[in-house]
Structure formats: C-alpha cells, structure tokens
Image (tube, rainbow, N blue to C red; front, side, top):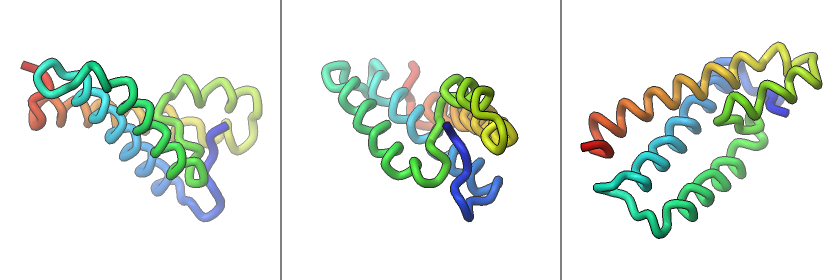
Length: 111
C-alpha cells in the first residue's frame, strides 16, 4: 500500500511522487526514443531506474508512480491509505505530463 511515512507532509509526499514520476517517465521516453535511445538496453535501464526509485522512495511514500497500483490497495485497506490515495493518483499524472512536455520540447525525444 502507498501511504505517507511519519513526518512526511502531504505537500512533501505529493512533490516527491511528482518528481519520481517525472524522472521515471523522462528515463523511459529518452531510452526508448528513436533518436536518443538504445533499444538493446532500454529494458535494463528502465528496470534499474525503477529499482533505484523504489529503494529511495519506499520509506517516504511507498513510491507509487502508477495510479493503478495505488488505488486497489487503498480501497481494500481503507483508513489513511484511502484518505491519501488522491496523492498517488494525481501526482503521477502531473509528473507524467510534465515529463512528456519536457522530453518532447527540450530533450528532443520526438522528431
């Protein structure tokens, strides 16, 4: 389940999830880009990036970066997880949109 760790504010958790999703999506868009990417190692780079983010974020928010992965456990567990689920739905959407805009407009991942 995803939930804010003790001492992590709603704003801090939201910001962390936005940044983590942003970084993850930028990695994905860059490594899979026809002009900048390398298909031979794309899966490895994406997997290692996610693993690193999980190791960093597990004790902060549980690291969602995927709204679908957060919603079902929150509904089943209820309580604080359900009250905080909006963070884990909205933050990855914001981070993903920002990453797509940056990757497309500033990193040249799309021709």
